[in-house]
Image (tube, rainbow, N blue to C red; front, side):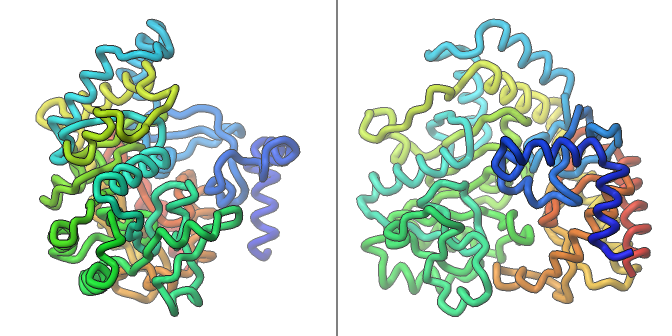
Amino acid sequence: MDLATETATLGKDRYGKSRALYERAKNVMAGGVTSQFRALSVPHPMFYDRAEGARIWDVDGNELLDFTLSQGPCILGHSNPELVERVTKAFARGQLFAGQHADELALAEALQRLIPCAELVRFTSSGSEAAHAVLRLARYVTGKPKFIKFIGHYHGWFDNVSFSVSPPVAALNDPTHPVPAGGGIPADLAASVVTLPWNDLEIVRDTLVRQGKEIGAIITEPVMCNQGCIEPREGYLQGLRDLADEFGVALIFDEIITGFRLDLSGAQGYYGVTPDLAMFGKALGSGLPLAAIVGRERFMGPLARNEVTHAGTMNGNNACVAAGLATVDILERNDGAAHRHIVAMGKRLRDGLSTVAAQSGLPILIQGPGPMFHMGFTKRKQVRAYHDVLDYDRPRYQEFCRRMLGSGVRLIERGLWYVSAAHTAADIDLAVEKADSVLKEMA
């Protein structure tokens, strides 16, 4: 039976209710989904009924050990009882005041204490909004209109940052030419974006020497999470910090994924490099829509003085802020025991998968710090930048995900794995055991 036939059979049998709902959804929802990334799911976009701890159940009743964690946010696991209770109580007091409240202040004070660059804080609802705000602040403070964005990095779906996210190999002949990430993006916005390969300081320096009078910001994922989970070369982030200071440029860390995963202080604390501005999200709200803009007073001050506009009716709403406070409290409790557990489980999973991958004889690379890491089929021993990840055999990894789903393990099809505080050592060992069986079948 070929893969297409087998996938269709699986969809009709094991996932019949989910497939029927997906077919129905296509009649009313564009593509049957509410986010483009969900359209990539195999065997088709799935429908889920409930989730608890490290597990999620689809509408067909299949119990799945979950390493997607809602694309990363559920750092405490699904439906953490304390978080649910605190969110419920906050919502019962009022869903939205359109004014300040004490929990919002308490969360801002916690972020200021934890995050090195967080001299001032603002809340918003999504990472895309946060990226829009930090670039606006950087342009205003530096007086320079352009920014450097690295190829393969994702900073949300808004027009100004939607360039060279996943460009085709042909576009890499001229990496400085921004490639729009889909239709409807105004061509003239490309003039404000300078796209460069990541992990190469000399290219950044050369660009700033030539265009430094026009460039007001460097925005980067501290770990290239969205493409291969690539860590920075030794000294790379500090090198960006030094260049930003030398050329009068704002250094922006997109910590939407790394925030609270690498460390409670973010990647900036983990690597010991402090940016001017940063964005936190995903894990901050543990599944509720919450993001934070944090930064040094020099760059955040214009918000306080009403010189730069940042608004949002839903900003700092009661339920989301309560989720943020609960998340921080739980991760900090007992000297950070929950976070240490996440790190330990992540490394156990990463290393266990590396062992069974090597035993399978298949060309597989697993890399990343642990709380999140990437797995993919490639002959490379290491990837350092976007052009390296183009070697991955993506259809083969999709087949791996499909087989793992059939074994009761849910994964993200682009290769990123997340671990939560709810995953146990037994969960990790079970996932490695399932992967071992699947890889042997594939081999």
